[in-house]
Image (cartoon, rainbow, N blue to C red; front, side, top):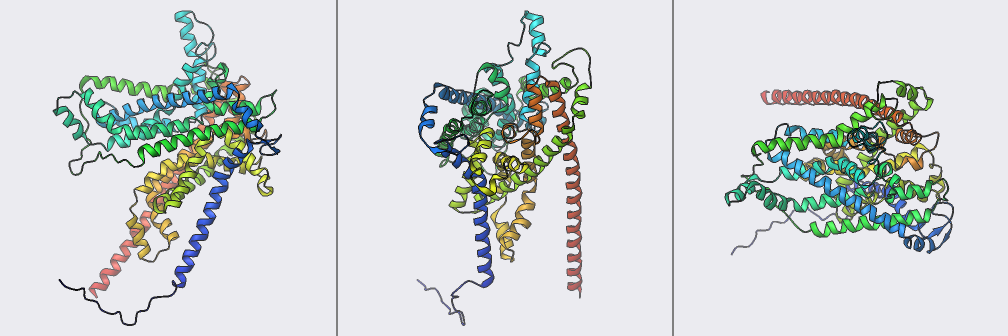
Length: 602
């Protein structure tokens, strides 16, 4: 047994305090962290807290008046309240289950089979995902409503059925909502499906199981934890659905949380019931929190390994002629979720009456472009989409980095901030912002201005941007940041020189998705906008309510065209800037290598 040799460190003394530059850096970091948490609290937590308190106040303004538990108990005692809750649960759960089943199947087809055109499934779903919900909903509305609607023409010619029997109600609403969220289910499941080892299926096949049995006994059980987590997430977001239930549910007297609040606050013959609307939001928040807790309890401490080391091989298999049926399912899903509503919107914008009729006309575009407010409306929408998407993506990047590199407190803050807006639909968020900012003198002046809309949009789309960016942040190894820190870079410099460049593709994707979400959002601006300050979604919905659905289609297509043009210009600028930066980096490296070679030669 030997003793460890110890050598005294000559002249070394334990420092009593940290160096001055270290103390200053830590102080600045703490100040910035405190400021960031304060801003996040004002944006994401103050509105739902104030809205919850508004459920216990009686007054003509949101969050104002005397304290009372009466309105809260009165709302809970109504049968209509629990009918709204039941409708919301049915719509969210059924649509999430249907979309997840279809998305999981398409993900399996894309990754595990040799189906023709399988490589087009992912880009097709990504393109469909960026379609605004109101644009998608109006497209389907033109398909099933009115005498000139294609579905009604078919029913009238084949069965003699008149009217619009499929224009509203549970069947069409479920079909439309499921079609809209199929891309979400697919994009959530294609990654886990690609990371599963095909050897697991081969082992089941060698044991005598058929391919169908291997799929249901091996593939699906291994994906069950992921599917449950995605189902909870999609159901939570489903509670905030507004545009599609508004188009297909209200006519059949089917109300969900968001539409019930909208009719409560904007009914022509009704006095706005802010306490009742806030009580509905409390029920919704309780449902979402319960789902999140269940998801954490079920999946929090479990680990499911599907990548098995050097033998890992996600190889596709040839399933024979049945793959043509898989291709047919893919084509049906694409038509269902994208092509049918898009084609109907394009055709309807050139029709004198919505649906299919004889002849084409440009009168709808002429009527839209002749209005003085159209140009300003499109410009306002583009500015809000670009700025709101960028700010939401920036907040999402900071929160994702905090959750990944921070301690338990920062992870808790990031989780709360990213999940809190999910519990508040856009229509309720507008009410929450008014409730929170109305009593504050400095923030009260923002009500009715584009800045209030911008704040609301940031809160609404930040969770979406977070889901797009957090994966890119998780892929960055901590050693890269530690290397920069060892080289003398501060945390701020490390963040902007190491993290941001590596996560830039995910950041741009989150920015684009969030911007599209802002451009097509109706639930928030329908309550916060004014007659002189409207977005394209509000103006299109007003045209639809007044019976000018074809003009609404034309307006939305003009917006999508403007988004495509702006996006193309931005992509071109980004490509040029990236090329110049890489060229400058190569030039700098060449100079360093040249100078180093000269020094060695000397």
